[in-house]
Amino acid sequence: METKFCPECRTDVTYSVKRQRISNTINAQYISYDGEVAYCDNCGSEMWIPGIHDSNLEALYAEYRAQNDTIMPEMVLEILKKYNIGKRPLSILLGWGEQTVSRYIDGHIPSKQYSDELTRILREPEYYRLLLERNKNNLASQLTYNRSKQAVDSILGQRETTNANIDTIVLYVLNKGEDITHLTLQKALYYIQGFYYAFYLDFLLNEDCEAWVHGPVYRSIYSRYLGYSYDTIDKPDTLDEGVFTDMEKGLIDSVVKHLCCYSGKILEAFTHQEAPWLIARKGLPVGTSSTRIIPKDDIGDYFTAVKEKYNMSSPADIYLYSVEMFNRVNG
Image 1 (tube, one colour):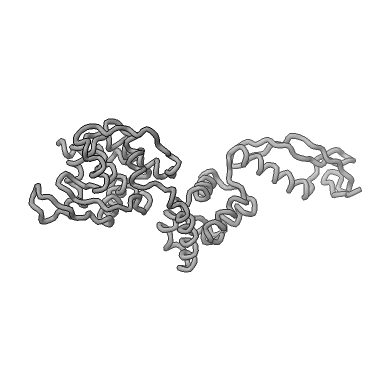
Image 2 (image 1 turned 120 degrees about the vertical axis):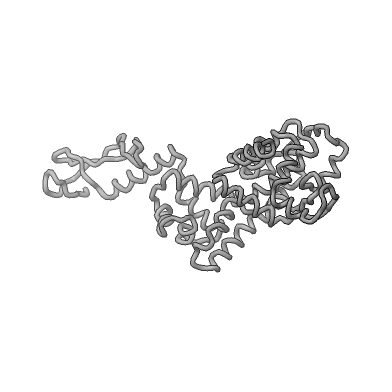
């Protein structure tokens, strides 16, 4: 029978192992789990046995993860494979210590904040691409960036046939909004384009908009709903929300909530004070028809500056801009 040193008896003794409920604290959280404890057969005192200790630690970590929905080591490994990036580069990309991701793969427990970040990266390729673009200068090698960008672009490219396009976005806005007129719809698409770029460094719409007299206009949508004139457009009978990512829905929902609450004429007045429309129509007399394109870069630059000016941390903060613009045009 195996013997181990007993601190109380001060000699090697045999011991017995009992299954019992054990409690420990991780990240200031009290955790109870089923584990094993070794007791000296001679004096009955508790003994420390390396193999049992390791087994209990695994059980403790497993219970903590189950209670807190904490990311598992194999899921972290999946991130590395999915986006073709190493442990150290991923840590650096996220602004963490260089060995942080390695420790999580080895079984260390991440904080809730770090666990949530890794889980979101795993589930949302769009979010990972955003992080990669924003923090690429932190990476030591251009090759590392290129490999990971190719991987995430490939993933997103496979979804192009199902991702939201202007037609599905129009249906979504009409479904979620109230009393959406043709004029309101055009401005909603413009704000969706601008704020999506500001938050996610990508344009949601492939189409260009034109700087018409009454503000930015997407010509294909204008032609489709021209017959409604100033009347409210009918809501669609059906809507497949499955084509939208969580980021897309969150951004569009915020635009509908905080901007489509105003009339189309109010939103038109907003756009007449914004740089993209003003720059595109520079030199044109007031009221002159025009099909000049509003460059996407101008839209992206303007709304990125808006996001920074109002210190927006999420699309929900769009209301800060909408309220100020409303006060400005009605001042």
